[in-house]
Image 1 (cartoon, rainbow, N blue to C red):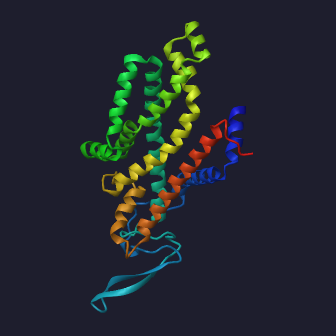
Image 2: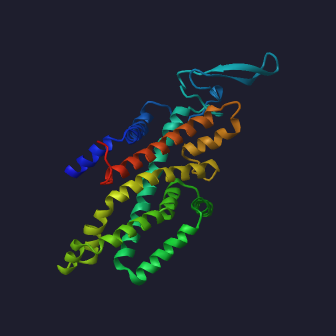
Image 3: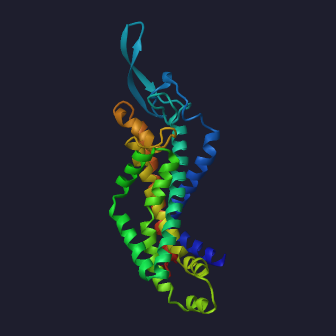
Length: 302
C-alpha cells in the first residue's frame, strides 16, 4: 500500500496524466450511469431525423403536401436530443454512451487477454531458454510480420463480426509487444539472487514464474496495458467503420460508418464519435505516459 501511495503521489505531479485519468473516469461513469437517463440508442423516429445539436441549425429538404414537392426547412437543435439525431431519428447522445460502453469493453477485455498471453509467453521464453525460447520467439516474430488490422479483417471476415469474436481476435493477435517486453525484463531477473535462492530451496518453476518473476515486471505491464488500450479501441472502431463491426451494437465506429455519407447535410453524425475517439485515445496515452514516468526511479516531478 505504501508503494502504491508513493507511485500515486508521483503520478499527481504529471498534469497531463491527471487530465487523462479524469476523462477516463468521466467516460466510465458516463458509460455506467448514462443509460438510465437517455432513450434507447436503437429507438427510431423518422419525424426527427438529422436534427442538429443544441445551438446549431441546418437546412433540409422535406416533402410538403401543400406544394406537392420538396421544400427547404430550417431545422434547429432541441434539448430532447442535445447532440442531435442521425438519419433514422436515433438519439446521438444515447448512441455515444452506448459506444463508450462498447469501446471500454473492447479496450479492457481485449487488452487484458493480450497482456495475459504475452506475459506468459514472454516469461516462459526467458526463464526456460534454449529450444523453448527459440520456438516461442520465432512464433512471436511470425505474428509480428502479419499486419495487425489486415489479420483482424481476415479473421472477422471468415468467422463473423460479433463483438465477442472481435474482442477475442484483438486479444489473440495483439500480445506480441507484451511478450517481447516481459522476455527482456525476465532475462535480467532470472539471474538475480532471489531467483537463484528460490531454486536452491526447491521452489517449482511455476512458483518462481508466478511469485517472483511476473510480479517484478508488473509496473512495465501496467504501463504497456494502458498504452495498448487505445489500439484495441481504434481497431474495433476501424472494423466497424468499414462495415465489419457488430451491427447489433451502437459503437463509435458504426456511427462513423453511418454518418460518412451525410457529412454535408448532417456533419455532427460523424464528427461527434470522432471527437470521442480522439479524447479517449489521447487520455489513455496521457495516462500511460504518466504511469511510465511515475514508475521510472530516475524521474522527478518535485
